[in-house]
Image 1 (cartoon, one colour):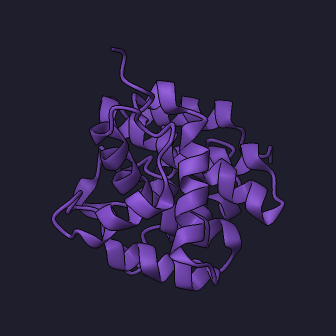
Image 2 (image 1 turned 45 degrees about the horizontal axis):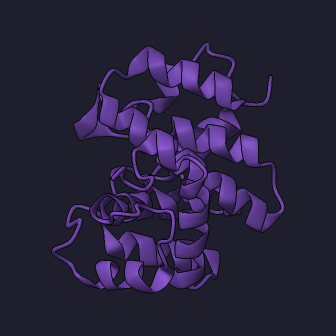
Amino acid sequence: MAKLTLERAQALLKKHTTEPHLFTHALAVSAAMGAMARHFGEDPEYWQAIGYLHDVDFEKYPEEHCKHIRELLEGEDVDPQDVDILISHGYGLCTHEVEPTTPIMKSLYTVDELTGIVMAAALMRPTGISDMEVKSLKKKFKDKGFAAKCNRAVIQQGCDMLGMDLSEVMALTIQGMRTEAEALGIGPKAE
């Protein structure tokens, strides 16, 4: 069984997804996962691949998210362990099948929601994510009306699972997403 690569993850997501916003979200989570991998001394490309593919069943099964990942990836030469990692990000939200128990699972669970708040905050700033600071992101995080669909309890629970402070995870997420600022449309706005 080959290790999941970013290229493979991109091809698999493309096979099951058409909505542009889902590709943007995949890229944001992938970028954040790369930064988390570096933090944990793990393989960034592998973590990015996992991040990119995490919502592979969302477009087809939004009401049953994470419950069809296994069947969609069956016969695709994806390691069953990788499938478990993908499913784990919905733990307690849309599935109870796989609990996040490893750093990669806990990171995916946490940054999945957090990237939404970072994206929304970056889109409002003339300088985008380029000079975004944790302090200003924390203000947005505390404002429950801002990016209201992003589940703050899940983000906090994820940080607790990781044994990391919210600020630290925010800093890593910003750092990761900054690497894809242009592709995500959150770079500095042209004058």
